[in-house]
Image 1: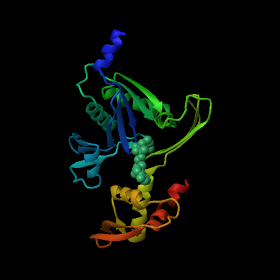
Image 2: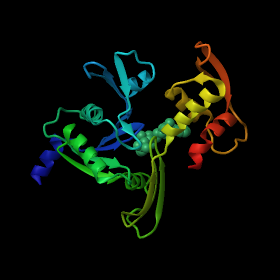
Image 3: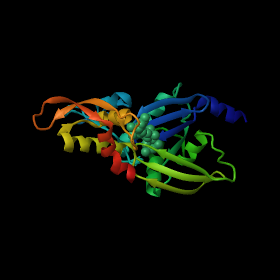
Image 4: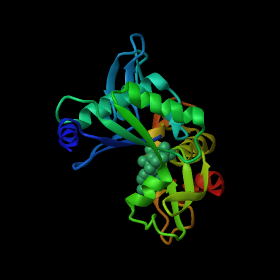
Length: 262
Ligand SMILES: Nc1ncnc2c1ncn2[C@@H]1O[C@H](COP(=O)(O)OP(=O)(O)OP(=O)(O)O)[C@@H](O)[C@H]1O
Ligand SMILES: [Mg+2]
């Protein structure tokens, strides 16, 4: 009892949603204390970390040769181990008010469809980032608990989670996943579809973060009552000059239709 009290006082156990687009850290008793894009900027030659999170995301597509902005997660799983570990270490440290006296226990949410090898990779990354013990929980179960579905009851609870890299659909009953599908398609692919569409249709080059802004502002799956337009700045691929162009929500719906129909 006393030992438990002491351990609780000395460490802050954390829960991590290690996402393709965003990583969140929750600390017991304090709530979500870190919510940052899963992006890391490093010095290309020395691999020294320059920025993690929002600052690094702002650099995406705008870095000089000496700096690289990296998204270490792809399709819901780790694509770059070293960088994921560095990112986790930084975010876990930021979440701790006092320097670790005892390293925290960490629970990480992972997509329901990941392989054993991928699970081990997440566990090892979290351990190397300073966790004392690592537990994994399936993302749909965590999401269902998060939105207060009665997961413990003997009834079917359906949850659909569209993320940056994966879309998960699961049915949960009696605290377990009864059935699930996890497809490796999400918001990132929509951004790529918008980049491709504008390049092919208008010879307009834009970066992924501009594509994400277009998607959020005027993107749709079905016709809108009042269709929208947006002024988009990019580079003309023929002249090489910066240009500004009015893009409509109809065009963006066309760009997104293939990804959405998957
Ligand atoms: N209002 C919005 N309209 C459309 N898409 C949005 C909106 N807000 C956020 N998104 C998209 O949602 C995605 C991020 O979702 P989320 O943070 O749940 O992903 P993630 O958990 O990091 O990814 P995953 O679970 O696949 O690993 C991004 O692609 C983002 O552009
Ligand atoms: Mg997610």
